[in-house]
Image (cartoon, rainbow, N blue to C red):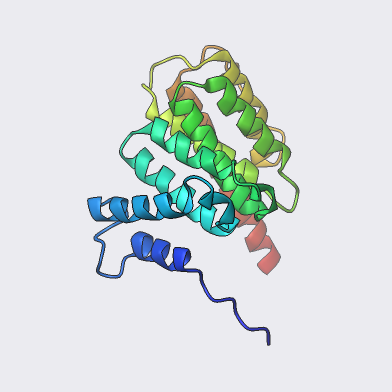
Length: 214
């Protein structure tokens, strides 16, 4: 049996911040943020970043993004998540890790007012969806839903967001669905559409599982 790889010091420090060991009350506490900042300065700033493994870099960039987003500081969140894509080895990271951070990057771009960049990143994610690997599309639907739910319910969504939602919803459900005219949809209406797509997908999966078990 191959020997299990020993966790890195960065992973162990990240684990303490995220899951707690009595040192930190939760990952958003001032103490947790200070601990993250020390790790970031040591391993993600300057030339040291290239020497940090891509797996550890993903952990620190993602945690930094999460802490900043929790505080509503989306510009800091965007800077931290984009640092991951500056690592010389980011394209060698696991597909799932790349895609999750790409989803975070799209969310941050949107929150910072760069809708075009966010939709471009969403499009990249959708293109990575395979019949046997639907994580990218799932991430897109979840982030789009979060975006719509964060906006005033009666505000009108942009034409590009409406069109993109119209295109990806049938792909997510996995079958042709008849959509009513979406032009001029509000964020509340788009959120309802995306949520209904999630419900339909879950119902179909449950029915399929039940049928296979009979």
